[in-house]
Image 1 (spheres, rainbow, N blue to C red):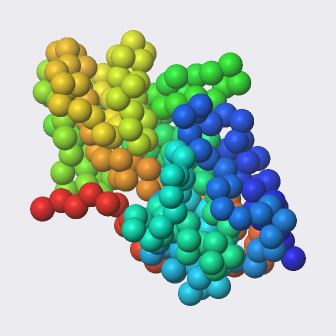
Image 2: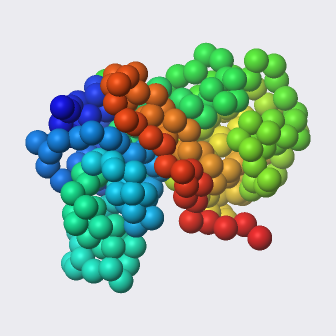
Image 3: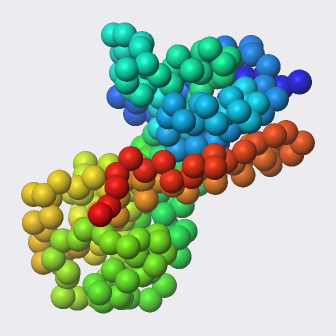
Length: 259
């Protein structure tokens, strides 16, 4: 019989809790490490619907990328999604764990998966820390592309119907920086690294005023991070081959709708 701590150990061997950003709240936010686990459900966001799905599937633990609780809760009621999810998880005896910026800062995590989708070569950490981990990655296309070719490539590889972009550069694009989620804080780092193109999500209007030889693409927060669900699934399935590990049936938990 496995316990919550056994699942946590495997996840934190991959993405140590010690490397999370100071503002983050990765880790176990609901439940006890000593609780028994017979099944785990994995998703990107811990919504009330995900908790209901876990309960219906007989899962004792939920593992997500985004933390259920980011800051302090002044009240826990079913009137908002976070309170409702917390209440449902506790009443159903389901532990909830998140690997957020911990999974962002390891090469085999979120940004590394973005680089793999694009087939980038010579990939390294964009904003490295002393231990070698860090936010974002940078690499090179196997062959340089024009701006329009890069747009078409990114849309195809990430399955996008649309993306937001700054003014296309006139020259060829070789070096590409990426950061999953909200990556506007690394725009200057991407420019300084020699990237011709920076791909991330949640970019505000004024950031799109870029210099002529630097291009910026916003592919969406969810779209840039969705691969982490499969990564966490593979990690747990490899370490617990005879254990019930499931990916949520509602894979597209994106709260943003495009019309």
